[in-house]
Amino acid sequence: MKYVRFMNRDQEIGYGCIQEDKLQLVDRNFLDPLCQLTTQWLSLDEVTLLAPVQPSKVVCVGLNYALHIKEMNHALPEEPVIFIKPPTCVIGPDEAIIYPKISQQVDYEAELAVVIGTTIKDATEVEATKAIFGYTCANDVTARDLQKIDGQWTRGKSFDTFCPIGPWVVTDVDPSQLDVQLLLNGVVQQSSNTRNFITSVPKLISFISQVMTLFPGDVVLTGTPEGVGPMQPGDEVIVKIATIGQLRNTLK
Ligand code: MG
Image (tube, rainbow, N blue to C red; front, side):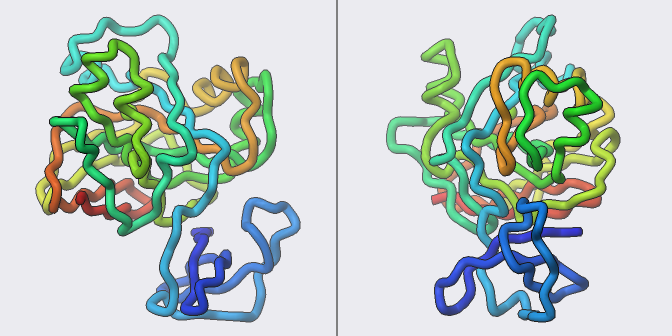
C-alpha cells in the first residue's frame, strides 16, 4: 500500500492510499491500527500531498555507506553515528527548501527513510522489524559549511525545511536492496543501493531504540551514499528510490 496525507480544496487534511492514479480515502490516520479504507475516491489533482507523517523526531544515521565516509574523510565508525533533526525541519513533496541566509553551502543527501508504526524501546532486531510501518524518500539537507565550523551537526542539519519527506509511505518493502538516487536539475548526482549499507535497517532501529523511545510516525533516515554536493536557489532536487517513488523539491 502507498499511504498519503493530503489537503483537499477546502483546506481539510485527510489520509488515503494511492490506487493506480487515484486516491482512495481512509477513515483516519493510516498509522492508527483501526484505520479502514472508505468507498470515497478523489483524483490526485484535487489534492495537495503533504509530508506523509508528522514525526515527534527524525533520527538520522550519519555515516552508513563506506564510499560516503571516504569522501567526507571520516574514519569508519565502530557503531552507528546518530543525530536528530527536529520536527520543524519536515516538509512535504514539492515544497520549497529555504536557503538560510547564514550558510554559503547547502548540500543534498538522498536517503531511504523508515517510518515507525508502533512504540518501541530496547527492541531486538526482530521487534524492530515488526515495528516498521513502511518506507519513504527523504533529503537530509545540510548546511555543510556550518556543520564543519561547529564540529557537531545540530545547527547545520536543523534549519526549518531541511527534511523533505514523501511523497507517500510504502508498506511491505524489503529495504535491503533498493536503488537510491539523487537528481539535481535532472542530472544524476548520487546513485547507490541500500545493499551497500554498513548497518542494516533492523540493526539501526534496534540500536536507536536502546537510546530513545520511538513512536508511531517517527522517521529514521538511514544515511546517504557518496556524491553529496551543493544546491542553489532555483534548483530542483529529486530523491528517487526503487519501488518507493520520487520526492521532488525546489530551493528558494
Ligand atoms: Mg545524512
